[in-house]
Length: 266
Image (cartoon, rainbow, N blue to C red):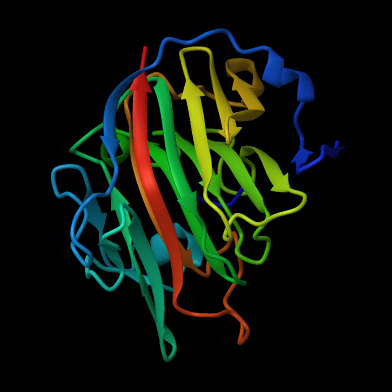
C-alpha cells in the first residue's frame, strides 16, 4: 500500500483500460479454498486462526508517513454481529488509532482469485486498502517481495479506487497502476466486490466482476516477482504520502465494513 483514456459507461468511469478486455476472459474452474464470512458475536475480534495483526506506528509511519497507531483493540477491529468485520479509525485529539490485519503465517497462496466484498470509509486523509505482500517480505524486503494492491482509495475521492503492482524497478511513486471510478456512486455508500485473478502470466483486476485492468509480465519495467505465495492485508490508514493528511472537515470515526474475504484456486 505504497505511493502509486477516460471511457464513460452508463454507471462507471474507467481510467486506463480497454473496454474489450472484459470479453477476453477464458472460463475458469475456481474452487473455494479459504474464506471468512465474519460470523460471530458483536464486539469480538476476528478469527485468530485466520488473522494476525500489525501493531504500532511502524518504521516512519509504515514507510508512508502515516499518522495512526495500529491496535488489536475491539474499538478498532471487531465483528458487528451481522456478518461483517469493521475496521475503525478513531481520532483522539491529535492522535489516531486504527487496525491492520493480515493472513501472514496463517494463509498464503500462489495464484488464484482473491476477493473481498466491502464498503470503504471516506474523507480527506483516509486511506483504506485490501492488498497482498509476497511471503518472503521479511527476508527479501520490499519491494523485492512484490506487492499487489487489489483496492486502495483516497478518502477525498470516494468514487475512485486503484489497482496497483509494486516491485523492483516499479515501486513507490512509480508503480504499475490504473484506476476505476464510479460515475454515479461512491464506494462508501454501498458494498462492492474487489478482486484479482492471478496466474503465472498476468494479474487481472476487477470491481464487481468487471475487468478494468490486466497486467502481464511484459508490462512491468523491472523484475516480475509474482511467482511465489502472497498473504492478504486489510487496513485503514490515516494520512500518509498517498492521501495527504486529514483536515478539519474529515469526519471521525471512519469505518471500513467487510462482508467477506474469499480465495479460490483452480
